[in-house]
Image (tube, rainbow, N blue to C red; front, side, top):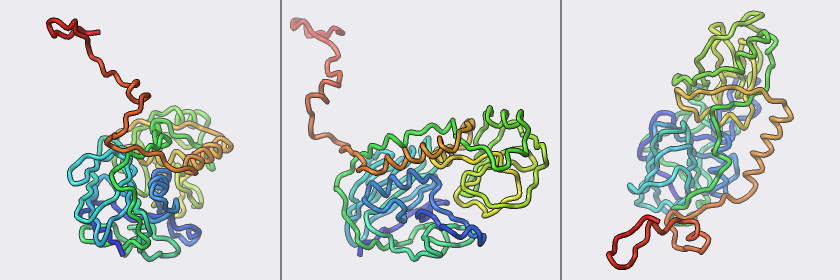
Length: 344
C-alpha cells in the first residue's frame, strides 16, 4: 500500500469528502468542501469519484511526500503557490509524486482554499457515512481533527498518474467573486423593500473573521421590519442570516443545523465557491436571481465536469506551426551591414 506522508500542515488543513448527508435534523452538520466545484475538479483530474475524500488546504499551507511507492496527485487552487522540490508549479496541476520528492503548497495573493486529490482511495474510516472533518464537534477525518505533521495516510488502489507535472486547464474555475448570486428568502418579508434594495446594492466587504462556519461581511447595517428573531429553523449552506447588528452572515460548510435570525436570501450553489475563495477585504455585491436561473447555473457547472480535464505539459517539446505563428519571434530587423537592429 502506498502512503501519503504529511510533513507539515497549517491550521485548517482537513480531510473532506462530499459531506455528511441526512443528519441535519439530528443537529449534525454536513461539513464537506468550502469550494465544492474546485474540490470536484481535483477529484475529476485524478479519475476519482467527484465526492471522494481529498485534502482541503487552507492558507496555512501543506507539505507532503510519498512513501512506499509513487502517487498520482492533482492540486486545484485559486492562486496558491506550489513547488516540487523547490521548482515552481502552477495553481492547478497534476503530477506523479515519487518517493523522495517533496510537494509544498503555500498561500498566494488570491484564494483561500485549495484541494489535493490522490489517485486512489485514502484509507480513512467514515463516521456517519462520511469522512468529512468537522473539527468543532470532533467528527470525521483523523479523530475529528485537522491534519498535522507526522500523519500518514494509506492509499488503497493507488495509481501513479501521468509522470511529469501538467497544467490543468479548467476555465470554469475562473469565477468572479465580486458578484454573488442569491435567491431571496425564505424570510425576506422581515425586511422592507428599501432594505432589500440596500442589501442588493451593497457593496459589502468580506471580513477576515470568516472561517469554515461562516463568512462575515461589513458595510451599512440593514434594519429589520419585523424584528431580528424568528423561531429557529433549518439552514442550508449559503443561507444569509441578518442578526440584530444588521450585518449579514453567510453560513458555510461547518454551519450550525438551525438558526434563529431571519434569512434574507440564500447564495446559489455555483457561487458558494467564489464566495469561499474571497480573501478578507474583497468587495462583493449580491445579485438576485430566480430559482430557474439558479438551476440552470448548477446544470452548467455539472456539465463542465462530465469530460476529461484538458492539460498541457509545463515544458513544451512540440512546436506546431499554429503555436509558432501565435508568437512574436521577431523584435527587429537589420540591414545586414552594420549589424544594428532596427525596430520593425
